[in-house]
Image (cartoon, rainbow, N blue to C red; front, side):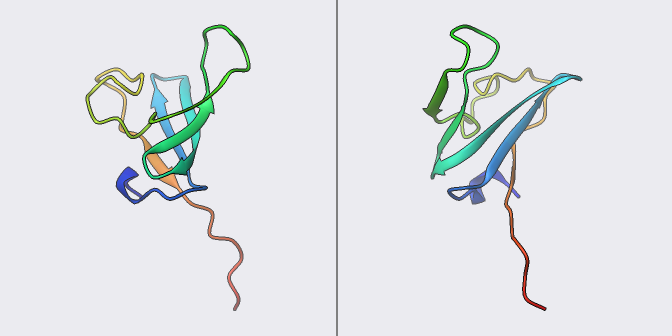
Length: 79
Protein backbone atom coordinates (compact mmCIF):
# COMPACT_ATOMS: atom_id res chain seq x y z
CA UNK A 1 0.00 0.00 0.00
CA UNK A 2 1.18 3.58 -0.43
CA UNK A 3 2.95 5.36 2.41
CA UNK A 4 0.05 7.83 2.56
CA UNK A 5 -2.17 5.01 3.90
CA UNK A 6 0.21 3.91 6.68
CA UNK A 7 -1.22 3.39 10.15
CA UNK A 8 0.35 2.71 13.55
CA UNK A 9 1.78 -0.82 13.67
CA UNK A 10 2.40 -1.07 9.92
CA UNK A 11 5.85 -2.00 8.62
CA UNK A 12 7.57 0.46 6.26
CA UNK A 13 10.56 -0.59 4.17
CA UNK A 14 12.80 0.71 1.42
CA UNK A 15 15.40 -1.01 -0.75
CA UNK A 16 18.82 0.71 -0.82
CA UNK A 17 20.85 -0.66 -3.71
CA UNK A 18 21.10 -4.35 -4.62
CA UNK A 19 21.86 -5.67 -1.11
CA UNK A 20 20.68 -3.35 1.65
CA UNK A 21 17.29 -2.15 2.83
CA UNK A 22 15.88 -0.23 5.78
CA UNK A 23 12.81 -1.21 7.78
CA UNK A 24 10.82 0.63 10.43
CA UNK A 25 7.55 0.41 12.30
CA UNK A 26 4.96 3.15 11.89
CA UNK A 27 4.38 4.64 15.36
CA UNK A 28 1.90 7.36 14.40
CA UNK A 29 0.93 9.23 11.23
CA UNK A 30 4.19 10.38 9.66
CA UNK A 31 6.37 8.88 12.44
CA UNK A 32 8.47 5.70 12.42
CA UNK A 33 10.66 3.85 14.89
CA UNK A 34 13.74 2.27 13.32
CA UNK A 35 17.38 1.37 13.92
CA UNK A 36 19.96 4.09 13.37
CA UNK A 37 21.76 2.26 10.55
CA UNK A 38 25.41 1.51 9.86
CA UNK A 39 26.89 4.35 11.92
CA UNK A 40 27.75 4.36 15.59
CA UNK A 41 26.43 4.17 18.22
CA UNK A 42 25.28 0.63 17.50
CA UNK A 43 21.85 -0.27 18.81
CA UNK A 44 20.47 3.25 18.73
CA UNK A 45 16.75 3.37 17.89
CA UNK A 46 15.25 6.53 16.45
CA UNK A 47 11.73 7.91 16.39
CA UNK A 48 11.40 10.31 13.46
CA UNK A 49 9.80 10.82 10.05
CA UNK A 50 11.94 8.30 8.15
CA UNK A 51 9.99 6.78 5.26
CA UNK A 52 7.56 9.70 5.09
CA UNK A 53 10.01 12.30 3.77
CA UNK A 54 9.09 13.41 0.26
CA UNK A 55 12.24 15.16 -1.01
CA UNK A 56 14.34 12.69 -3.08
CA UNK A 57 17.27 11.34 -1.08
CA UNK A 58 16.02 12.38 2.37
CA UNK A 59 15.08 8.82 3.38
CA UNK A 60 18.68 7.74 2.77
CA UNK A 61 18.01 6.46 -0.72
CA UNK A 62 19.73 7.19 -3.99
CA UNK A 63 17.81 8.37 -7.02
CA UNK A 64 17.83 4.74 -8.24
CA UNK A 65 16.14 3.26 -5.16
CA UNK A 66 12.36 2.74 -5.11
CA UNK A 67 10.10 4.70 -2.80
CA UNK A 68 9.31 3.17 0.61
CA UNK A 69 6.48 0.65 0.77
CA UNK A 70 4.08 -0.22 3.60
CA UNK A 71 2.83 -3.64 4.65
CA UNK A 72 0.07 -4.41 7.17
CA UNK A 73 -0.55 -7.65 9.02
CA UNK A 74 -4.20 -8.58 8.59
CA UNK A 75 -4.25 -11.68 10.81
CA UNK A 76 -6.41 -14.74 10.54
CA UNK A 77 -9.85 -13.88 9.28
CA UNK A 78 -12.86 -15.95 10.29
CA UNK A 79 -14.17 -18.20 7.53
